[in-house]
Amino acid sequence: MADLILSPNLPRPDEFYANLIAAHEGLTDDESAALNARLILILANHIGDSEVLEEALRIARSEA
Amino acid sequence: MFQDRYTLAFRLYPYARSVDQDAAAPAHHRVVVVGGGPIGLATALDLGRQGHPVLLLDDHEGVGQGSKAICFAKRTMEIAARYGCGSKLVEKGVIWNLGKVFHDDRKIYDFNLLPEDGHRFPAFINLQQPYFERFLHEQIVAEQAKGAPIEIRGKNRVDAVEVKDDGVALDVMTPEGGYRITADWLIACDGASSPTRKMMGLDFEGKVFQDSFLIADIRMKSESFPTERWFWFEPWFKSGASTLLHKQPDDVWRVDFQIGWDVDRKEELREEKIRARLDAMLGAGVEYDLVWSSIYTFQCRRMKKFRHGRVIFAGDSAHQVSPFGARGANSGIQDVDNLGWKLGLVLEGRAPDRLIDSYDEERRHGADENILNSTRSTEFITPKTKMSHIFRNAVLELAEHHDFARGLVNSGRLSVPCTYDGLSLTGADALPGGPDRTRPGSPCPDAPLGAGFLLDRLGGGGFTLLTIDAEAPETFVEDGITVTRLALSAGDGPALRERYLGGAASAVYLLRPDQHVTARWDRFDAAAVRTALRHACAKD
Image 1: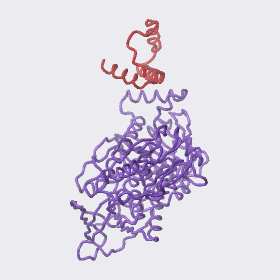
Image 2: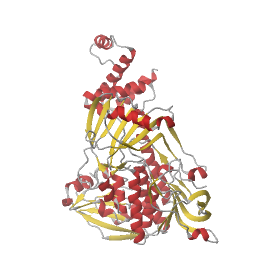
Image 3: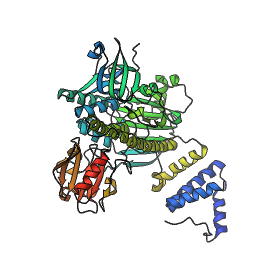
Image 4: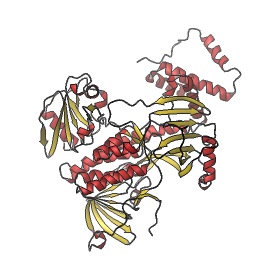
């Protein structure tokens, strides 16, 4: 059972961030929301660890 | 004063004057069942087969029209087999394994239920509810001929229930006027809007889903719609926010259109309006007859307690779910299966009254599991917020190209019986390496035994000691309860080995009359079995 990683883990953070924003270029708000939803589902399946996912949900929610 | 609420499909028990109506004092009955739907009929059948006198009161004279519940699960067929009418269901029913899921104008994927080998019955059959009820009634008639003390009174409506510590008194209305009876036990199987529950002022709380569904049963001779379950999310033909097409016997198809919350029911039920929806979906030029139609809304809710002294609620009167997953009638039949042997033992004085409390505990657990599953399906099919809708459609889009997302598509998780994990009657698991699926509390999975099947060997109505390559006495009696041994061997088949031995070399299972595992061991230990048996009958 892995713990949710909250320390820096992206090798090239600026590049990832730029790619994320670029992926949304030219999309309407609805299309962007749909893209985000697909992305979350793909990543969640890749993680596949329910404890990690629940922890991530909890932390994301606590920022709201 | 006596108006039919619905048209009959089969008139099975016409009103006839009973001696109770002319009795000087109220006649007394041991068990009265209210409601002649599938749950009431099965309850009467279960108790009558055990030899317990049972009186069933129904305010109609037979089975109502309309397909209603159409999907019967393996467990229901297994229970019906125990009652003697399992084969009829399968012979009449439509067996299906293939499903297709569509979004808009695209088929996203298809699936095969891939039923596991080595079971007498298929995973599901589609069958109109009136047939199911008729088969149960035919079995009642067959049991009556053999002497089973079952009596059914048509057009006998319970108008008042007076609850006492040791029973009930009922005011019953008939076309010839009213009469009064008393009973030790009352089993209320009178449906989701249970008059019994209302007369007793009991709660029925839960979640109302703000959507309506239009059901149309159509008869057509068509090659273009095979025996498969087709489910559309947001179909291109715009006949509903979702649509389900499912085959029933007699060339009848069930079509369900999700049509929204604020609908004019009368307008939507006009034949031209229904045909417009159907034509858009089926394409022009497809000939069909409209057999039955109805609009329903649904709730997921249950009573806080299913037992109130000597009054017991079973089926929809106790719990109601959305139709997705076929968890209504199927779970009601499991209620009956659970209650039958317990009430039998209590009626015979062989188990204490508190055994009935375990019905309440176990079936509330079952209802919660069904409500959870059916609520989740409902949320997926009818998303209630914009974000929920975005995620639902993201799942559908991904499912078209990626396997992983198909597991998230939820158009109903089909009914399976629950396991009574950790509940009061459930005993020890002392079988190291034993399979998870047969742990204590589980319903026994079937397995082939020679030319027959395991579950048919567990249908005797009593407790069974199933031994696999283990020594044990052929029968033994503990405080009035007899246990009969069924001696098997690992050599009897790979399915038996895989489902009951797992990594163990030998096994001893104590099985309840409803074919749930009470406890299991790797060898026979008289003291341990006696303890588990007393425990399973609420004696300790």
